[in-house]
Image 1 (cartoon, helix red, strand yellow):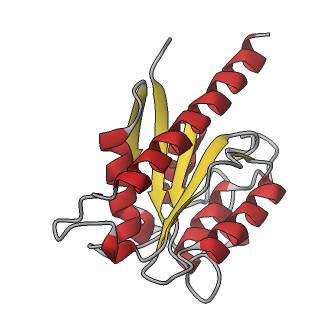
Image 2: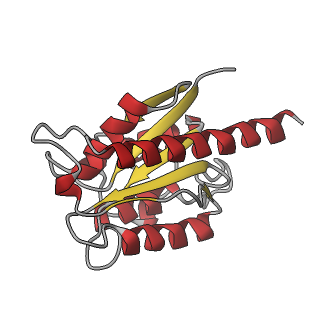
Length: 194
């Protein structure tokens, strides 16, 4: 079986983000057969502008993001929680990659296998943010892993000072999420082949 290309996005811009660290942990602890690329251009995505949302007018950084999402076999998104929801920078990026007003490109998120993770220092972690992101993905028809859920609450207790995930329970759930994502990717490949 071929390697699955996973495009990973952290909803946090912080250099020491536990959400970005979760994605690095996914690279390290993936159950095999996955090549996980962590996106580092979220800060460069301009505010969504419908007047510019065509293949010819979009900023190059947005067209590149759309290309990477379209070419990936699956998405892996780690989101912090801001004001009971997802960060604006993450929602903004999703807005740019969820459209096809010209009906010429296809919808990059439609039926795309995806998994959601989240870490936060609070007792509830990113529960509400993940729920909000799942709601967005209902509209985009993204094929999201439902279970298991990885909510790294009290995240400062799960990572060491170097930003390495050291909590074995969280590592186990992370592997299970990635395995579930691979199942969705395999199912998508089977549908395309039939």
